[in-house]
Length: 338
Ligand code: A2P
Image (cartoon, rainbow, N blue to C red; front, side, top):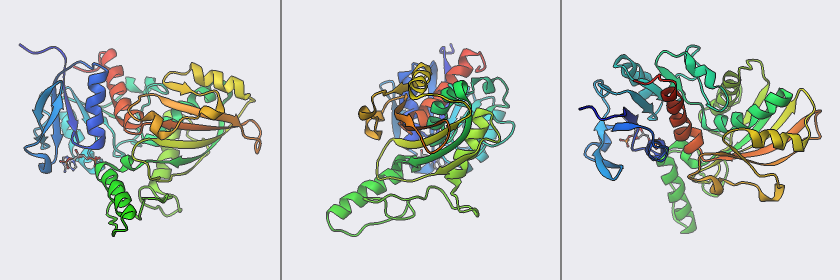
């Protein structure tokens, strides 16, 4: 007899996001009848824990998606490009946490608190946005709803885990090595990250911006349905293990005082607002938490109708696994999963 619930595959189940996907599926009591953890040959023979049992990790191949209802992908863009269409052909709905399909016109790019309506129309693949973009649009949406966005300038402070498990290990090893006057190795990051900050995430493009910065501009416009919104981003890697922060300067179309902005943010789903400036959120506060935290909301006197805010979230959670699971929950509630 078929167990009630859905067959869920996690592609990249042994990675930093994949592990969090499993945790969030369990915490949210997503109806899983069978979990299939998929990874590379490097993980063959290993197990992951699921509901108190040891489940063998399977090697990703063309036949891995037979009988799968939902496939959560987080193993890099090239893996998604190759295998997501195969998963869809096998009858699964894919929620993809890589950049592979985000800007494809027929693929919805969704933050459920911002544009859930985009889920109504898809061809089997739904894209999960870039981590910093998710937390930024979650905070921008309620301000846009009451006063209209005119321009956004953002600087990010992004943790090592955004670059995966090897990146976290590299930050740890560099930190230990430096404190012990030993030689350091730099393989994952472009330069030493320990005790430094790097204005360099993903590759540089011809215009002097990085691809991560382009993602923040283009994905924000797509998610918010504002194709001409002026957005300028500077993305910075900081020596923090988990949790991304953004300092966001928002220029609005209409006046909105700080108290009204705080009220709008507080009323929005998925946000926790710290009204008192001195009790600002930090990356460490957010680890293991689903919400997006907003603090230090204040007037930006350098422009008309300007506000500044500090927005922090666990990049592995709301920036990746939680948002993917929320997309799956919304699809399931709409009867769009088998
Ligand atoms: P593996 O652990 O077997 O290498 P992270 O984002 O933390 O770096 O994790 C990347 C995830 O993607 C891991 O689960 C990793 O599996 C998986 N992965 C990387 N390359 C492949 C591949 N060629 N096929 C399947 N999974 C892959």
